[in-house]
Image (tube, rainbow, N blue to C red):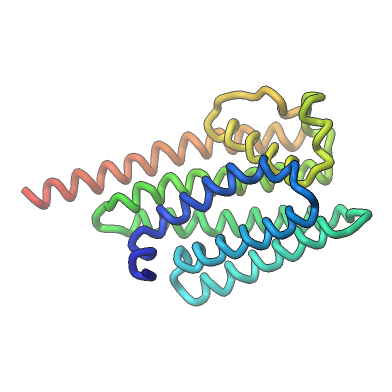
Length: 227
């Protein structure tokens, strides 16, 4: 079982990412206690998957420290009757660092492979989605510190008091920026979001160009070696 997961670790990670993307907006209407239970279950799944992604001991140690602290800050922020902003700030900061670390390792292993497998292609997609999640936490951090940096439509702004909806909204904004599709419910309205938006847009295009070139190059090299 473990060996099978290791061989298809990026597929397992992709399944976890899709599950989180679907459940995050649905959890807005859950009760507070149910949301916390969902957070614990989701964190447990992510820890199990990421223990497979992070192979070396120091990688696992650092990943678990970052993830544990981010999870603790998340729960701390949710259970307080009068929510302290510092809990959300700590969560977004640690989550952004953790996800950026995961993207770096995924890309490093893809570029170090002599041949390309199907799971490596899935890994490139996972890296793209995880990068979007990392940028989303950066935007969430900016919003907690300087909310006027964003212009949010009234229909979305009414639900910003919900922690899960707020996180989902910035994940949506990040993916729209990463793919350069544009904005609708939320848009940049000032510094430093203007700078972050163009940086993420350039990163998204550069990621696709470089990673696709690497995958195609490995496939061509493999085909030539077979001949």
